[in-house]
Structure formats: structure tokens, C-alpha cells
Length: 354
Image 1: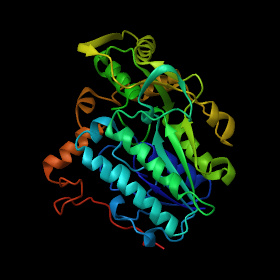
Image 2: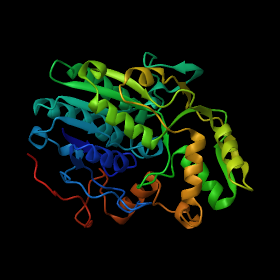
Image 3: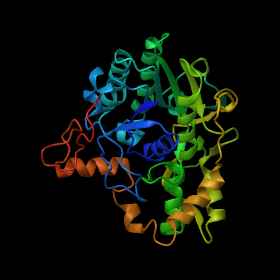
């Protein structure tokens, strides 16, 4: 299968693409590589990269592909709040244009990286894929809009599937320290304290980055009838946690560590639990392997011994918003988050589109 993976140089993408290559797929990437300075481990072997901005994709670029895996986005709530209009431009409008281009080019499968954040605030019960949308941020709203637009494109020749990822955690070659588990473990390693910015009561559905990658592999391999125009919550049954319980687990696993709260910490508005029964039962080949305890132990081992230094944790390298702000301040990006002529590492085509 010839597969285009957008966002192939991101936190999930660098772990997904080697799996696809290992399975024998012909994989091409599309990534602006904003986070080129954010490697935590050696990156995977480079892939051909279309070398264009997501917002500039046309059907010509997608000719000859069998599937598109769409990961690329402004990837969290703080970053999307930088300029909500940009979030809708990139995460929504550009994603819908990509889907239209894919359908026009004859791409038959479109695997969209959605998010459980579209459920918003509902902690009274575990929400399955039939639950109402209640997004609280531009990021969550953009995911709702894309799912709705993709569903309207679905037909006998074009099969979209919506993978609603829980909050990701775990070690990746291109690490993020701005997701909750990774962040709290970094606090523990660099300060001896698990610092909570909220009161710790909100619930979060959590999923390891490698289990997310496996979900995308499964969605590509599944028969059409199993995925066509369907949503799947991506995670593992039983892996919903209150943030304070995650903090306490880290403190138990990190010797000498204590849990502390930021001054004035209040409840986070994002508060929801998610049901993962459908994906475990109905997506062929999906078998999640990780628990939060396993992921914490993995991160503690990777961060310890200098892997995550106080200076590294304080800097922009592993934080999406900090990195983008630095690129803007340096003049490497313009106000539309496009590379300027001053930046010499913007992606260039490594292979011409078919």
C-alpha cells in the first residue's frame, strides 16, 4: 500500500512510520518540521517528504496513493489558543481540503487523527462513540468539524475513519513534555516534585503513543466494512485516571518524590472519561499493550541519568507552544506560521509527487 502520512515528523508520526515501513508499505511524509530541534532519541531513517505546507496540497500531490493518514495539526490546546483562527485554518480548513484532494485523486482510505477532547466536560460516565460533542477549545472544535466534513465525503470509493485519541503519553523519538503524564514525570525527575497545575480532580483518558500507532496500523489494514465512516475511541479499557492519581503513582515509582500543587491551583475545565470497548472489540488487530504504570516506568528510565535535564525541561525543545513562539520571535515563521526566507531548514521535496 502506498501511504501518505501527514505530520510524520511529530510525536506520533515518528513512531508510526517505522511500523508501516517494516510492514512493507511505501510510505511518504508531509511535514513542515516545526519541531526539528526536538529530538529526544535518534530519529528513524528519513522518509521521502512532499516538502509542502499542508495548506497547499492539491490532488496532483496525492495521485497514486492508496491511503492518507492525517496526523498533522496544531497539536494541543495551549498552541491552538495562540491564534484560534490559525487553528481553524490549519486543523479544520486545511484538513478538509486535504480530504477533498485525496478523494479527487482516487485515494480510497483516509485515517483521521481525531481526539477525545471533542467530548469536552462530562465526567459522570464513560463516553462511547455515540456521545454528544461538547468541545471546550478551538482544538476540540476543529476535530468535530473535520469529522463532520469527512462523513459527508464518505461513499463507495472513499472511506474515512476517525481515530479519537485519548491523551497521549510515553516515550517517542520526538518527545513532547507538554502532555500530562510526560510532564509530571519530567517534573519528578528534574525537581523531585510532581507539580500539579490543577487541583488534580479532573479525569483523563490516557493512551500510550505506541498504542496509538498500533491503532493507525490496524485502521489501515482492516477490511473496509469494519472502518468505513466510523469513529473509534483510541485507548485501553480501564485507562481513565484522575490527574491526582497519576501524580500519586509517579510519586510511588520515583524514590523520594512528593506531590505538590501550584499556587492557586483550581479544577481544569477539561474533565471526561471515555469508553474504549468498541476499538478493542471491533477494530481487527488492535491490541493495546501499555498501562499508565508501564508508561511512567518507561519515562522514568528514559529521563533519569541526564536524559531529561532541568535546563532541557525549562527550555522550548519539548514544548509545542514554546517552540512555535521561539520560531516566531526569531523570524523563522511569519504570523501565519509559514516559513520565512530567513529559515534555512524548511522542508524541501525529497521525492516528486506521482
